[in-house]
Length: 441
Image 1 (cartoon, helix red, strand yellow):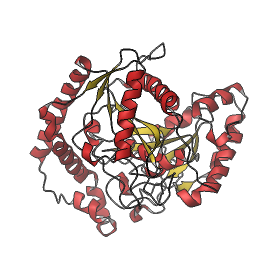
Image 2: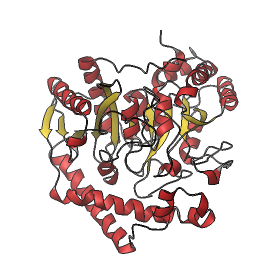
Image 3: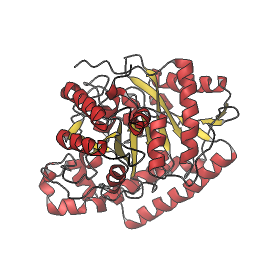
Image 4: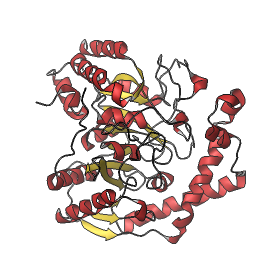
């Protein structure tokens, strides 16, 4: 029998709403798991155990109130939760306790979720000091960033769902490193009110989960689509664009094998593979993305620079002081270039392929906690405002997770999730289930 702390959110939601399981039981089991593994993983910046149990007991006293009834959720510590610390992993905000939930937290809470606490993050979700969190499979390796604690918490059974944010690759890469599923929706479909944003035209709130069904459960709860597929997706005839990208030679052997083996398995299951190339005009998009991040980040961190300059990480301070020297016309040109590329990418997916299959990272997680990995496998898709999904596929040659990334057109979130469920099932059938972390309490 599956331990309660290992239940997927979808399975738990079904049992909770039928009365076969209590909210208090699953919350208590999750908190017991946290007590056992948190000293090794260090996923949480703040754990609200008593409050979570009280939420669960209150939920048990009333009929199920929503799609997330009793589901345990952790929140990245750049997103406000009423009454809990939001420190952004920076000294200037030690003890800061907002009085109001961020919009995404308020939505989840209104739908019956149990909020467990705040997960550790890279400073401000940007390029400051790293989280104290370790990888769920090997705590001496990075969990990725900036949504470090969120990915590790879900991977190690310390939350069923966790919120993250992505400016470059801060959801998809940590998911790949920790062997969990994750979803970054189309930009703008999840309200970012109450979350610290780095670059407003890029930052997107998404989530980590234990399977595609859980990602879809959240997507439906957050009303990401006007209509949802009525029948299960099939791989027969699905056009998958295989995109190795310009940094393929930097992907380790295990990461390369994960992509190629997955592509072959999907072809065997009936999908049509297309060797995808992108327009030459996309070659300069990485530079445009950097201009947008730095120029918008300059405005984001101006108030922090003025209020407490001596407490800012040097990298954050350099952004706030515009050390890169970007001017307003540079930002406008980069935004125009990104807007044109988004239209071109949508057209490409309409004409040539249904979705893109590409690496989620450069392979297995680096050793140490300072280097959280490169966002270069992710930042293009974030710039394009495309929905992205991480699927774990197995362990690499040093025993750490590897996986794939799926990318769809803007607004195609519901269809991408439907295809991802079929893809995940096909890969599990061909390659076996994802091994769980072997951490011992």
